[in-house]
Image (cartoon, rainbow, N blue to C red; front, side, top):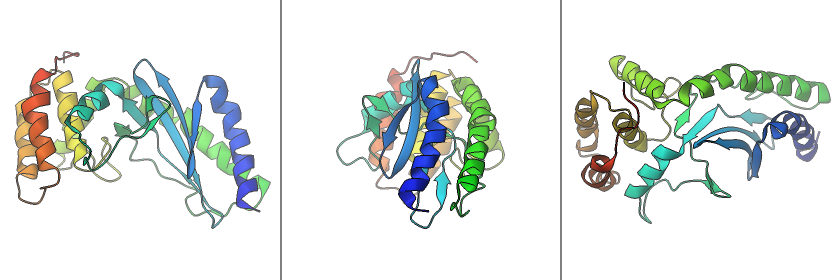
Length: 226
């Protein structure tokens, strides 16, 4: 089966479910379906590979209030510019990192195989993925998970277990969330991040971290009270 046919059959099935719900689509190397609602954007993504495989992405959630604050530290040299499509920020704040792509290297050569894949991915979108989105659309729930990760000796973006998106910029997001949530352990989180950014290995990120601490975090008014 040609890649173009595989893509057509898959998108016909996914489109039929997501587009009536208001989802928009951004087509690049694959397709990203996204739904902005009240400052929170939910996204799902599918990538079609030449080998005959289809890669699926975990649920992604963008909190505009977090990303718009974070953008204040950026300049033209910022390591990871934001993805924006038609005015909607698509760079995720959170990712469902425990998601497992069961069809990661599965052959997709028949309509039956594609139908099985679509049933599985839509099952995730409507089930476990939807539960993640609902839970993590409320930032205090995200903060609770951040604390659980640190107590377990893990970072907020730890592979396959973490919750925040990014590399070291995940720590920026975490501090912003902490401040928005009026977190009583905010200063402890600053000290935890200081250990990482001042260890002599993060010269690329350090100027942005210092700007975040000096110019951005002090201006954030808490929005949620724990």
